[in-house]
Image (cartoon, rainbow, N blue to C red):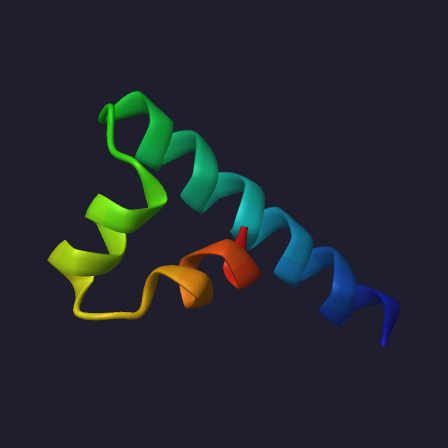
Length: 44
């Protein structure tokens, strides 16, 4: 269970780091990926 939480946390941080590196807002990333912006926020 702890491994799952760590994996999800690491994934969220990675998504956020890459998104910011590309200069994208959560809203822009969501639009490009076909997701709702709040979903991106939940991931991060």
